Image (tube, rainbow, N blue to C red; front, side):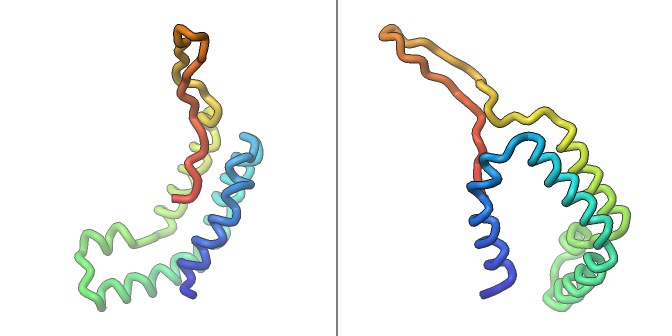
Length: 117
């Protein structure tokens, strides 16, 4: 089983917990991920260098290689982005619209977790 397949299985297994997590739990997770990115940036950059070499060897276009390249600054921006997401209002549970049918039935749209994509 490949590393990517293993990650997918682990993500799917965590789906039920994550989908029922409170806003505070989700924000703590985002903060922990942000911190881990910064703390492990040297390892991430070293592993990314291997990906870059493989991409070049396989003829990956320069534009895609640039998008793949991770630097200290890019990792810091990713971590900052996670912190910005944590600072946003949690949309889960938000009712977008509600209509009452003539028979009294209420039909509405509510934001729910999407799950593992």
